[in-house]
Length: 264
Ligand code: DGL
Image (cartoon, rainbow, N blue to C red; front, top):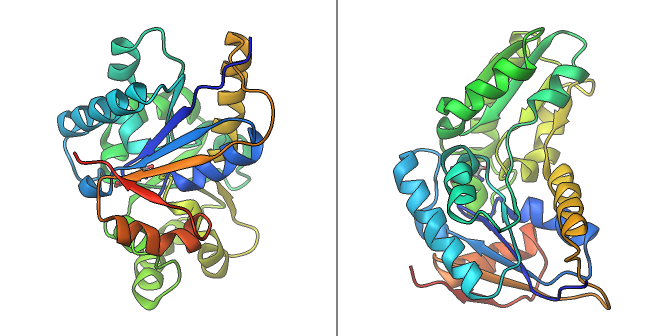
């Protein structure tokens, strides 16, 4: 049975747009509502309780707008709140995301994998469990990246400050022999071009945006709630300054789309 209801996608800010690109490309017939919680970004340094409360408020908003499924397009929110959301909305299809430890452990040739992520993700029990499960035969070196999300929120993907921060985070991982870097925060895929400049060509960069879009499609298919018909719209919301979000959209999403204010 086709279902024209929208899919709700959210992140602490603009990072989840990297996932939204993948969802839009894979599922053109779906209506999408994206909420950037820019009024509360970054999540990476916040407590799990704070993030859980934000995720509940956002989920309520998206459900009130008729969402048939949720995508937690944020590794930090997944670590803090995916279990809570699943418990609270047991009937709702929810796709969440975590750093790509399994594919990276399979891909590495040097046996050393680096993880770039937020402090919140790296400190979480969920991440520890992920390592326990999939990283027994490789060395995993974690690198929290404070400040990086804020640069991307400003749409600064290759300016001197972003470059210096990223260089400082990546250099120790390369020095340890990492040949595979996990982009464990949905903001970081926007830094791929800069990363390609900063790391040797044989270092792989792995993120999970495309896998999340595939998983979402599978889930909707199994439930029989994929949309049909022609290509649909994407609705954009932010809890931060609308003008700020609109300013970075041409860089991170596409030009000329309207943004609404989520007053929370
Ligand atoms: N984009 C988010 C993630 O995937 C969180 C960034 C932040 O707000 O610190 O982890």
